[in-house]
Image (cartoon, rainbow, N blue to C red; front, side):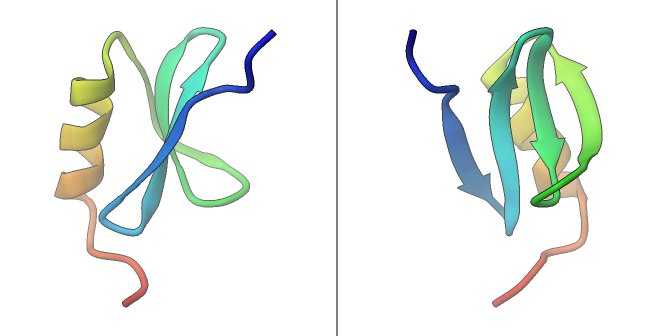
Length: 52
């Protein structure tokens, strides 16, 4: 079994979960689930930039 895919977008993590794609802040889901990775990326871009 492969580990879930995970990408950093706008300072948030986009992760593939069992029920779709989610936007998370290290330890909690902020948005989702989404049907596609692209939908999750769009949601992360709408959040205030985190970090840097």
